[in-house]
Image (tube, rainbow, N blue to C red; front, side, top):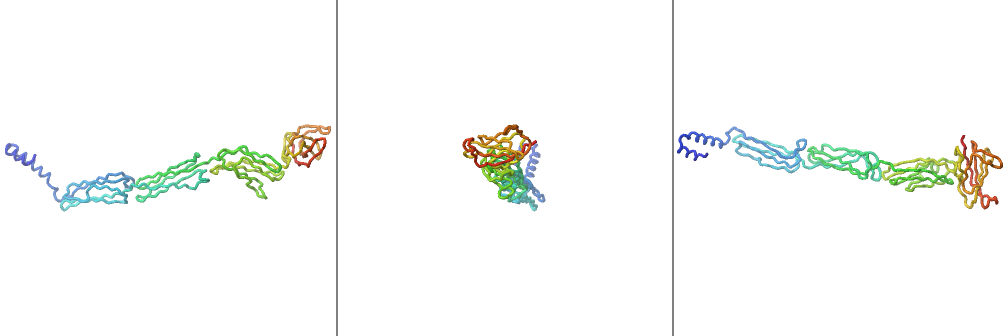
Length: 373
């Protein structure tokens, strides 16, 4: 109720005079300025995304509320948008001779740090890793500074498009994820059925391989020209013929298959070198009647095979093919013989033309085998 209306009520109703006067006095007291000697009050409200370690990670709006002041400065609402190590904002209020100031310091970092993966080593072969891998992440932050970066490891499964994701975090709590992409293959390729076949001072090495085998290497011991070991083949085929071998020499061939990631699988095979007489190998021990096999001769229509034991010829045969199967017992020149334990030497000649002509070529060779007890 206003003062004028109170006076009207005084003129018309004397009984309410005291009530109207009291109401007017209360209104005057509420409108009066704060008494001198009372400092003004300042409260502040900060709006923004709170990060870590006293940092904000978004635009920050500062609202001031001032009471009991005749005047103020710096107390308007302000919004901070730029990254800063510490922006100070101050509100000052004055009431008579009293002054109140309040300052807030805003550390603002809205920018995520940089993050980059650092593998412990370069790819093992042809852009591939073939054993367990550890990756560390490193980062830089221009404002708040770095807090920590993660690490990761990978040990399979095989993957041509592998990925490890790591991150870096700054002191304000901003996080950056960074993937590390790589190719991983720790499984050796397949190599199967490695065999050798005897030839005249040669060895035919054969094998089968899996589809991921990109390279085959063959190392031979003893090597060439007196070397302990020599790589005699490197390629992608499924067979190789090694020549100029020493008759009777035992050779070890290490046949290795490699894939694109340089995973390696290896098989060993031993080979006894022969001349034209191929099987049994020189000095080979047998427990059953062996098949005698030799290299065929040009223009030969038959062969003469002779078997010697203790310096005595015990067999002479004339097969048409370059092989002859011995038996446990046989007859030669009217006498019965048995394949007894001991050392045997055998010879082969090529027969030219009809057997009745008795025309023989140069002896193909000789070799030995041992019948074991």
